Length: 153
Image (cartoon, rainbow, N blue to C red; front, side, top):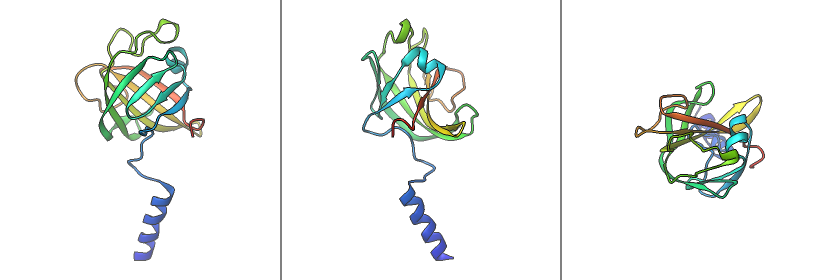
């Protein structure tokens, strides 16, 4: 029994399977838009745990608040954890004159990985307000975007 537990732990470590693994890392990665909102508003982005850079060159500074915030994330609410960041700055006008958060100012951003239709995607939710978000769809949610992860790897 001990060997089975030990081997399982080793395999989990080697394969990188972790309940706390999150999509954004210190080094930036490019992500292509997948959802209609990402296509219309942001276009391709470069994301890291420090910054979200839009195709216009505008960016939002990110400050990690929680590496694995428990909550109801994703389209279905079945994603149990997301990275949550406090946002500093205003990206201003993005694609077609749209802004990241409509008329509001982005105060928090959450990021998670989600499987949709057999592929993995990066989900991003943006929020207004002073409370740290606990789910993708709650009061203060101003935008939700999806990006292709498979193309970023």
